[in-house]
Image 1 (cartoon, each protein chain N blue to C red):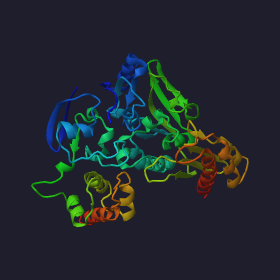
Image 2: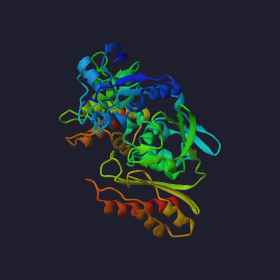
Image 3: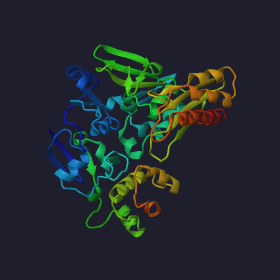
Image 4: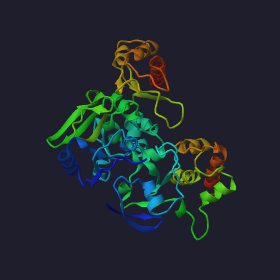
Length: 153
Length: 274
């Protein structure tokens, strides 16, 4: 089947099999490998990206369901060679260790601040419940999100 | 992991969706948010040959005050149930229970209708709407009918829905100031409940739903009867452990679940009785 969607501001049209998962479509058809696949069962959040501006788990969405939608992945955040404030906050606060969960964490964190611009530490912890960090680097991840919120971004 | 191959059809209306499913018979499945069905398909526990995508039927996404009850369109997402001011005012137990579903990403996609039609005893919303005495409206090729929540759940992932019927609306009675509580016992933040309890109370009236206590969501009517006849919360809660025959699994034995049910029902009723 044919789908057409906007990915990081660019219109993409593709012929796909209906069973193609959104994450697989982005990684394999569009070569956007910044989004990782972790558990592949909608538990870990590594594959989080934005669908029409909201964080979703792209391992549990068909590419066909995203037909006509607006997708933003980790590759679409930096503008003009300048990191997104959330990426900058993760860098400044050492919000990562191995980095595998990071793209999903950043996408989920941006979505969280869209819905709650000034979260408490508890609200950040609960808001990121769908993202697992196997390095258990949560402390600095939470600090990164709080720093980004405090910076008014 | 990829699901087995299927044909994908996108419905432009409820009527078209029903006619597509009737055309393809039992091999066809409705796809709403996909957060119950797609995981099953990826694990090859389900392999429908046709998916009828109803996810774009935005006219089935609404939360309306309908006098004595709140009418919720089946395609209303968990996040919209959680954040609805109408539900916060009239059915706060349901809004709160929706917040317990999965995580924010899951709640951005999953729908209340999908969760109920999937009829998973471990899901939060089937037991919650059961406790609240909800009615489900379903539409099929031969018309529309209403099914009381207590008559809906027939077995593990089995409901009273016929293959060509689609759940379109959930009608939840207003709580009219009743006290309420939702207790979810799990090991990690986003897990399914090992046991969960949705409860409300207004004087001698009450409703208690149990999550993950058997092959279907359970309405603990013996607990409500005990409260109605003046039993203490502690005594009424004891009845919960005899309401169901829960399964044993990696998380808990059947006996442990029965114990947990009475403890959580007591906590829930204490909170709802304040």
